[in-house]
Image 1 (cartoon, one colour):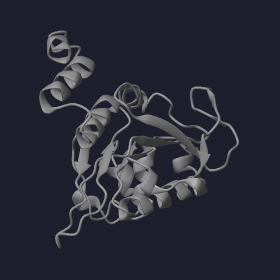
Image 2 (image 1 turned 120 degrees about the vertical axis):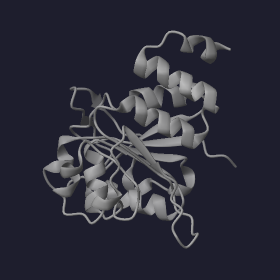
Image 3 (image 1 turned 45 degrees about the horizontal axis):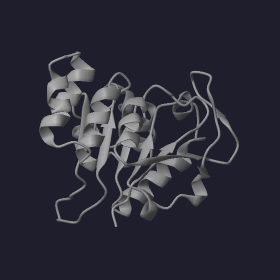
Image 4 (image 1 turned 30 degrees about the vertical axis):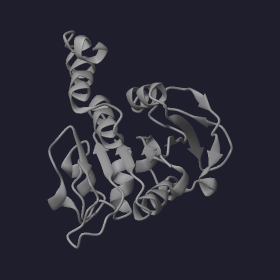
Length: 207
Protein backbone atom coordinates (compact mmCIF):
# COMPACT_ATOMS: atom_id res chain seq x y z
CA UNK A 1 0.00 0.00 0.00
CA UNK A 2 1.33 3.43 -0.92
CA UNK A 3 1.73 5.69 2.08
CA UNK A 4 0.14 9.10 1.61
CA UNK A 5 0.64 10.70 5.02
CA UNK A 6 3.48 13.17 5.51
CA UNK A 7 4.38 14.05 9.09
CA UNK A 8 5.45 17.63 9.77
CA UNK A 9 7.25 18.22 13.05
CA UNK A 10 6.07 21.34 14.90
CA UNK A 11 7.65 22.99 17.91
CA UNK A 12 8.05 26.42 19.47
CA UNK A 13 10.03 28.82 17.22
CA UNK A 14 9.18 26.59 14.22
CA UNK A 15 10.15 28.44 11.00
CA UNK A 16 6.66 28.45 9.56
CA UNK A 17 7.57 29.74 6.06
CA UNK A 18 9.99 26.92 5.25
CA UNK A 19 7.60 24.00 4.53
CA UNK A 20 4.83 25.95 2.80
CA UNK A 21 5.71 25.16 -0.82
CA UNK A 22 6.08 21.50 0.11
CA UNK A 23 2.92 21.03 2.13
CA UNK A 24 0.68 23.01 -0.24
CA UNK A 25 1.63 20.92 -3.26
CA UNK A 26 1.58 17.62 -1.38
CA UNK A 27 -1.91 18.33 -0.09
CA UNK A 28 -2.99 19.18 -3.63
CA UNK A 29 -1.61 15.88 -4.92
CA UNK A 30 -3.33 13.40 -2.63
CA UNK A 31 -1.18 13.55 0.48
CA UNK A 32 -2.37 14.25 4.00
CA UNK A 33 -0.11 16.41 6.18
CA UNK A 34 -0.27 15.66 9.91
CA UNK A 35 1.60 17.72 12.48
CA UNK A 36 3.66 16.08 15.22
CA UNK A 37 4.61 17.71 18.51
CA UNK A 38 6.71 16.65 21.48
CA UNK A 39 3.45 16.76 23.42
CA UNK A 40 -0.17 17.57 22.58
CA UNK A 41 0.27 21.13 23.86
CA UNK A 42 -0.01 24.01 21.35
CA UNK A 43 3.20 25.45 19.94
CA UNK A 44 3.96 28.97 18.72
CA UNK A 45 5.82 29.38 15.46
CA UNK A 46 8.51 31.95 14.74
CA UNK A 47 5.84 33.95 12.92
CA UNK A 48 3.57 33.96 15.96
CA UNK A 49 1.07 31.35 14.75
CA UNK A 50 -0.39 28.99 17.32
CA UNK A 51 -0.56 25.34 16.22
CA UNK A 52 -2.05 22.31 17.95
CA UNK A 53 -0.25 19.07 16.97
CA UNK A 54 -2.32 16.28 15.44
CA UNK A 55 -0.30 13.66 17.31
CA UNK A 56 2.63 13.37 19.68
CA UNK A 57 6.11 12.12 18.90
CA UNK A 58 5.63 8.94 20.92
CA UNK A 59 2.65 8.09 18.68
CA UNK A 60 4.66 8.48 15.48
CA UNK A 61 5.36 5.30 13.51
CA UNK A 62 7.56 5.37 10.38
CA UNK A 63 5.51 2.50 9.03
CA UNK A 64 2.53 4.86 8.75
CA UNK A 65 4.42 7.65 7.02
CA UNK A 66 5.66 8.63 3.58
CA UNK A 67 8.05 11.26 4.97
CA UNK A 68 9.13 13.03 8.16
CA UNK A 69 9.58 16.76 7.53
CA UNK A 70 11.76 18.79 9.91
CA UNK A 71 12.08 22.56 9.63
CA UNK A 72 14.28 25.15 11.25
CA UNK A 73 13.69 26.64 14.68
CA UNK A 74 15.72 28.71 17.11
CA UNK A 75 15.49 25.82 19.56
CA UNK A 76 17.73 23.64 17.40
CA UNK A 77 20.68 25.83 18.39
CA UNK A 78 19.87 26.63 22.01
CA UNK A 79 19.85 23.25 23.73
CA UNK A 80 18.59 19.69 23.44
CA UNK A 81 14.83 20.37 23.48
CA UNK A 82 14.40 19.17 19.91
CA UNK A 83 16.85 16.25 20.09
CA UNK A 84 13.93 13.76 20.28
CA UNK A 85 12.99 14.77 16.73
CA UNK A 86 16.50 13.99 15.52
CA UNK A 87 16.24 10.60 17.21
CA UNK A 88 12.90 10.07 15.47
CA UNK A 89 14.65 10.86 12.18
CA UNK A 90 17.12 8.08 12.93
CA UNK A 91 14.25 5.67 13.51
CA UNK A 92 12.65 6.71 10.21
CA UNK A 93 15.84 6.32 8.21
CA UNK A 94 16.62 2.95 9.75
CA UNK A 95 13.10 1.83 8.83
CA UNK A 96 13.62 2.96 5.22
CA UNK A 97 11.25 5.92 5.48
CA UNK A 98 12.53 9.22 4.05
CA UNK A 99 13.37 12.30 6.10
CA UNK A 100 13.62 15.90 4.88
CA UNK A 101 15.39 18.55 6.97
CA UNK A 102 15.90 22.24 6.27
CA UNK A 103 17.73 25.04 8.08
CA UNK A 104 18.44 24.38 11.77
CA UNK A 105 17.04 20.86 11.55
CA UNK A 106 20.15 19.90 9.58
CA UNK A 107 22.25 20.80 12.64
CA UNK A 108 20.01 18.59 14.76
CA UNK A 109 20.64 15.69 12.40
CA UNK A 110 24.36 16.45 12.40
CA UNK A 111 24.45 16.23 16.21
CA UNK A 112 22.63 12.91 16.00
CA UNK A 113 25.34 11.59 13.64
CA UNK A 114 22.95 11.19 10.72
CA UNK A 115 25.01 13.30 8.30
CA UNK A 116 28.35 11.65 8.95
CA UNK A 117 28.11 9.24 6.01
CA UNK A 118 25.55 10.92 3.74
CA UNK A 119 25.70 13.64 1.12
CA UNK A 120 24.03 16.73 2.58
CA UNK A 121 23.87 20.50 2.65
CA UNK A 122 22.75 23.27 4.99
CA UNK A 123 23.10 27.04 5.37
CA UNK A 124 26.91 26.97 5.17
CA UNK A 125 29.46 24.29 5.92
CA UNK A 126 30.84 25.97 9.05
CA UNK A 127 27.37 26.05 10.60
CA UNK A 128 27.35 22.26 10.66
CA UNK A 129 31.05 22.09 11.51
CA UNK A 130 30.25 23.91 14.75
CA UNK A 131 28.21 20.88 15.86
CA UNK A 132 31.38 18.79 15.97
CA UNK A 133 29.98 16.24 13.54
CA UNK A 134 32.16 13.95 11.42
CA UNK A 135 30.47 14.51 8.07
CA UNK A 136 32.26 17.58 6.74
CA UNK A 137 33.71 15.67 3.80
CA UNK A 138 30.19 14.82 2.62
CA UNK A 139 28.98 18.44 2.63
CA UNK A 140 27.76 19.61 -0.79
CA UNK A 141 27.59 23.25 -1.88
CA UNK A 142 24.09 23.11 -3.38
CA UNK A 143 20.64 24.58 -2.83
CA UNK A 144 19.28 21.20 -1.75
CA UNK A 145 20.62 17.66 -1.74
CA UNK A 146 18.99 14.23 -1.79
CA UNK A 147 20.98 11.25 -0.52
CA UNK A 148 19.33 8.04 -1.71
CA UNK A 149 20.31 6.11 1.39
CA UNK A 150 22.10 3.30 -0.43
CA UNK A 151 25.36 2.48 1.33
CA UNK A 152 28.54 0.95 -0.06
CA UNK A 153 27.44 -2.53 0.99
CA UNK A 154 24.24 -2.29 -1.02
CA UNK A 155 21.96 -2.00 2.00
CA UNK A 156 19.07 0.42 1.62
CA UNK A 157 18.22 3.09 4.17
CA UNK A 158 15.66 5.83 4.02
CA UNK A 159 16.46 8.68 1.66
CA UNK A 160 17.46 12.02 3.19
CA UNK A 161 16.77 15.50 1.79
CA UNK A 162 18.59 18.54 3.20
CA UNK A 163 18.54 22.25 2.36
CA UNK A 164 19.58 25.62 3.73
CA UNK A 165 17.17 28.23 5.12
CA UNK A 166 17.02 30.33 1.94
CA UNK A 167 15.97 27.42 -0.28
CA UNK A 168 12.40 26.31 0.52
CA UNK A 169 11.62 25.98 -3.20
CA UNK A 170 14.62 23.77 -3.94
CA UNK A 171 13.79 21.81 -0.78
CA UNK A 172 10.26 21.22 -2.08
CA UNK A 173 11.61 20.23 -5.52
CA UNK A 174 13.77 17.50 -3.99
CA UNK A 175 10.85 16.18 -1.94
CA UNK A 176 8.53 16.14 -4.95
CA UNK A 177 11.14 14.26 -6.97
CA UNK A 178 11.68 11.77 -4.18
CA UNK A 179 7.96 11.07 -3.72
CA UNK A 180 7.14 11.14 -7.43
CA UNK A 181 4.68 14.03 -7.14
CA UNK A 182 5.59 15.35 -10.60
CA UNK A 183 7.17 13.66 -13.60
CA UNK A 184 10.54 15.15 -14.54
CA UNK A 185 9.41 17.77 -17.08
CA UNK A 186 6.69 19.15 -14.83
CA UNK A 187 9.00 19.10 -11.80
CA UNK A 188 11.49 21.25 -13.69
CA UNK A 189 8.68 23.59 -14.79
CA UNK A 190 7.35 23.89 -11.24
CA UNK A 191 10.81 24.83 -10.01
CA UNK A 192 11.33 27.38 -12.78
CA UNK A 193 7.98 28.96 -12.02
CA UNK A 194 8.38 29.33 -8.28
CA UNK A 195 12.14 29.80 -8.08
CA UNK A 196 12.83 31.81 -11.24
CA UNK A 197 9.39 33.40 -11.86
CA UNK A 198 9.51 31.88 -15.34
CA UNK A 199 5.97 32.41 -16.65
CA UNK A 200 6.59 30.07 -19.59
CA UNK A 201 6.58 27.17 -17.12
CA UNK A 202 2.80 27.55 -16.81
CA UNK A 203 2.35 25.95 -20.23
CA UNK A 204 4.16 22.80 -19.12
CA UNK A 205 2.34 22.58 -15.79
CA UNK A 206 -1.06 23.06 -17.38
CA UNK A 207 -0.35 20.79 -20.34
